Length: 237
View 1: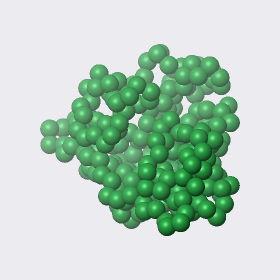
View 2: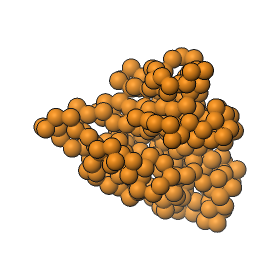
View 3: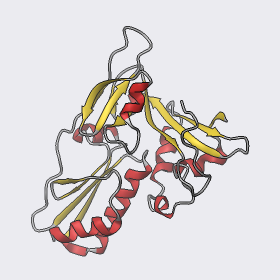
View 4: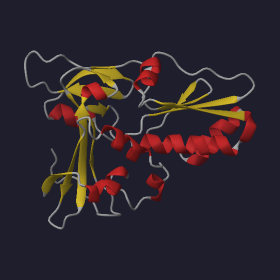
């Protein structure tokens, strides 16, 4: 196993979070590619784990915290660590060793894994736990930027409000499904999108990726299916 920097050859695979075999991930559109092109010169680091055949089985992406949705200084923020665990595609690479933030529930980016490797919890926002491992004594702990407001419902119509940053393919998938469902349901639905890569938009709302139907947040991790998203909107109509 070798750890390498991302190359142009590997970019299409990276944009699909190593799941180029997945038709579902292809629904997420090109938002991650757009995000990557905007931030690759701002200190973004992408490392890939490849085996002896050159097959990519894992990745980590990180960048200076000043360019992320977390408040902090002189730190690197890990957007995600992902080791391919499916039988499809390049096969299961998990449990063979791997070297942020985490989720309290055991399905992805488990906070408990980071804690076992010396990270400490410094903040929490729902299921999302912010952890860090300082290397110097005077390092200042980071913190989540908290939600400041939520979208308001438009009178007489169902309001679908989608916030997207672009870095996470899963969140992009939830956004695309909501947008498609809203369009198919016609004039009774108003779709509003918020590009939180724009720092002013993010600072106004304090929301990086989210989906609201009227003034109620819809859980997007794991992303709801297109059919479920459409059903929730239709019920509101």
